Length: 218
Image 1: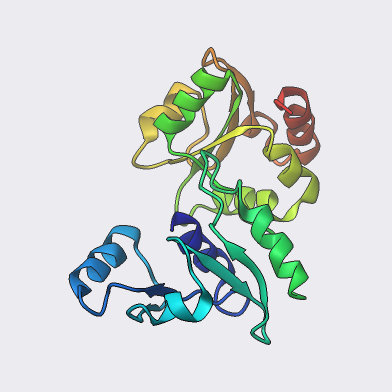
Image 2: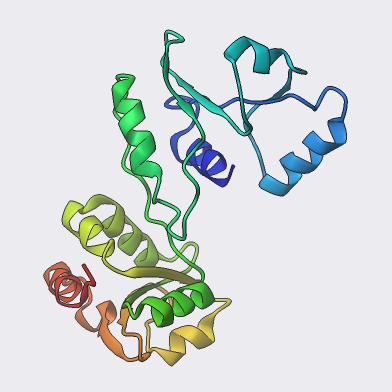
């Protein structure tokens, strides 16, 4: 379910329409309401008793069907499970969309919270890319634009454990790594040593790319 919620947010109904059908909600609506609250579901959720199971020959739960715009079933089965990387099964969905004649938009960069990123770095011994961001900050907006629009940087960023903090509420973390407040990119190794700060070479995109190439884990 986390994948469905994320895909609905990333792609929108113009690209992918998602409908969830529950066989038990007609007799137990409280279960559906609890499910919606827990998973923050924003797409339609329908109750169908056992009719959906009979109609589509559903043998196990949860089952999923991918239909094109003409209603043709292109895939059915159990959705890939979410892994530690939220984007790990997005490629699977993109392939299905292309089979349906729809070119999917590029997936957004997924960022971890600071503590989760630190844990993953210690576990995998990978370098972190720390984005110090603050709402309304011009420098943060420049960095976000760079990360989302420069194709080479987007690929290089995939080689890092990507972490984002709020430059205002998590100012102590920014200070710890000597990051500019707000709006900076910092590369940190598993020993917590700073390898590169974008602010030191402010607006030098070539320097940022060199640092990403040198310190990527790919």
